[in-house]
Every structure is written in C-alpha cells, then in structure tokens.
Image 1 (tube, rainbow, N blue to C red):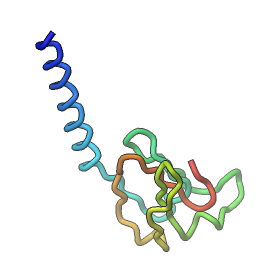
Image 2 (cartoon, rainbow, N blue to C red; image 1 turned 45 degrees about the vertical axis):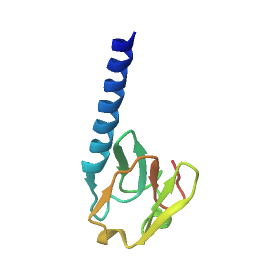
Image 3 (cartoon, helix red, strand yellow; image 1 turned 180 degrees about the vertical axis):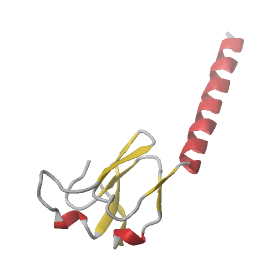
Length: 101
C-alpha cells in the first residue's frame, strides 16, 4: 500500500512540475491583423483575423483584454500592433472587444 501511495505521489509531483513548465515556456506571437477574437483552450491561444460575420468589427481593432475565469479584468492594452507576444497563463481567457469566450 505504501509503495502505491509513493508512486501516486511521484506521478502527481511530476505532473505538477511539467504543467508549470509548459505554461512558463509557451508563448504565442501575435501580429497586427491577427488580433480579433482570442480565447484560451488548454494551453493554446485561438485567434481569428479578418471580419466577423462579413462585417468589419470596430470593437476588436484597438484593445485586448485578459480575463480570469471569475471575470476580473487583468490588463488592457491599446493598439494591438504594438503587442509582440502574449504569455499563456493558467486560468486566463484572452478576449478582444465585446466577444468573451
């Protein structure tokens, strides 16, 4: 029984260390025109560029927001063409404008 518990503990520790390392090292590069609708799925940022349902969307052109799962706004950045990279963090959804994922 002790061996089983030690094995489970080792697996949990390694899983935690690996997960922290993945989130610390992964970055997604964003360029102007790509910043429209952003969402975090697992450890990947999903974004789309261009128009939303065939209409230009002025709400997503000048600001990027980051939200926690509780809805608290973490930061706001004007002029997305100045954004070079966004760090992927745990428990954060990235959203632009009025579209929140």
